[in-house]
Each structure stands twice: as C-alpha cells, then as structure tokens.
Picture 1: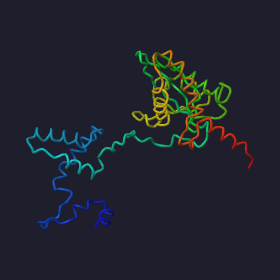
Picture 2 (picture 1 turned 120 degrees about the horizontal axis):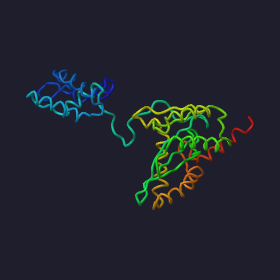
Picture 3 (picture 1 turned 180 degrees about the vertical axis):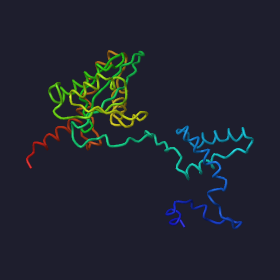
Picture 4 (picture 1 turned 135 degrees about the horizontal axis):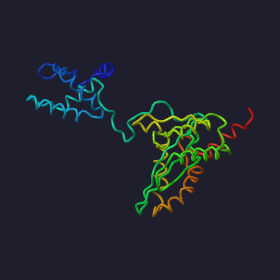
Amino acid sequence: MKAITDTLDISRSNQYESKTGRKRYGTRKDDEIYLPLVKEITDNRPTFGYRRVTAVINRILVEKKHHRINHKRIYRIMRANHLLLQKHTGRPVRAHTGDIITLASNMRWCSDMFEILCWNGQKVRIAFAMDCCDREIMGHIATTGGITGDMVRDLMASSMEYRFGKADGLPNPIEWLSDNGSAYTANETISFARLMGFKPCTTPYYSPESNGMAESFVKTFKRDYVYMHDLPDAISVMEQLPFWFEDYNENHPHKGLKMLSPREFRRKEAKLERCPV
C-alpha cells in the first residue's frame, strides 16, 4: 500500500476502509466552494498562511451567518492546490535566481552595508566590496553618518586600486552586485561604475537574498568579530575595523573555498596559474 500511495502522492490513511465499511477520502464535495475564496485571499495577501486565510474566511462566513470552517480543512485545500507558504527553516525563504558565486576571481564583485551598535548608543555604518569567487574583502568605508554615493564611488576606486594597483579603470569588465540603496543606484554612481568598466546590477526588490554572499558575510563578520570584541564607542570600533577585515581575509576559513581563507585561496590559485602544463 505504501509504495502505491507514494507513487500516486496521496495519503495512505485515506485508502483504508473504516470499521463501517466506508472509505475516508481527503476531499469533500463542497471544497470547491471555498477554493475561489482562498485564491482571492492569497492573491491579495501572498504572505498569509493557512491559519490567517482561515481567519479571513471565517470572518466572511460569520458576516454571512454561515458556519465557521476548520483551519485543517483550509490547510488541506491549500496544500492540494499548492497555495501553502514555504516552510520556515531558519533560513531566508526567498530563493535568489541564478548563482552568485563565480568560477574565477574578478568576474563579479558584490557590495552591501551594515551597521554596528556601540555600547554608548552610537552607530557605525559600514560598506564593503567583496569578490564573489575568492571572498576577499577588497575595501571598506565606515562612518557614523549615512553612507552616500560619494562614499560608494570611493569604495569602488579603492577596491580597484587594491586589486589591480590602479584606480583609473578595470582591465576587464566586472559585475558590481548590490541592493537598491540610494547610494548604489544614484545616477552619479551608475555613471562612474560604467566609466570604470563595471557592469552595475541590483537585486530584485524585496529580495535581499539575491545578494546572499554579502548577506552571509555580514552575519559571519558580526558573529566572529563584532560580537567578540569590546564596542565602547564609535571611535574604538572604527579603529578595530581594519584589523578585523585583515584577519578575515588572511585567516578566516570558508567551506566554499575548501576551508581556505580568501588570501590562501588566492595564493593557491596564483600558483596554479603559474604552474606549467
């Protein structure tokens, strides 16, 4: 029985006969009455799960002086019609489209911003640039105010100088992946990026997970560096930042780099490039 029900993707318990000789079926005749209402609610409120959908439906039914419906029944209807939300696993639920990781360095760089709250209430806002292959942080900027387009353009220039020894243009086109923050999408920033040889690209709205590598770095950096050190005030934090980034680049192992640090990975790749075939 199990092999048959697994193949047909149906419930095994509903295929057994009850003591009265009747079979228990997973659907009811009037389920089709509720399906259009369920779809209308999920279309207007796509973040609602079956319990919230049930609450809205019952609100409507009470106004019409009908009997309330059980949330288990709504769950069954939504499951049968693929209307349920993705299950929460502790990870972002919006899956990005396409791969962020590149097969070689200097093909795509990503950038993002985050802030550190100091013990005295001050905030340090940071933006960084990272290679999507070797994960090296090539540059960062920090301020106690807001990050502007001028600062992002300075970040682009300093990252170019760090990686290529000059800031007057890239030797080959490189994608610049960021979110839709105003500092990244400003006309001056886009024009400067294209002038330098970057190909600016931004994540879809309401989907920061599409820049997942930068998001992952922020979590790692806060967990392994920020929360492990004293944060008395903004000056102290900004003085420690260069050491934190240096230690990350030189010593922090990555599973995606076969447990090498970013610079270890780059040195290994450089040796392979120099090695004769």
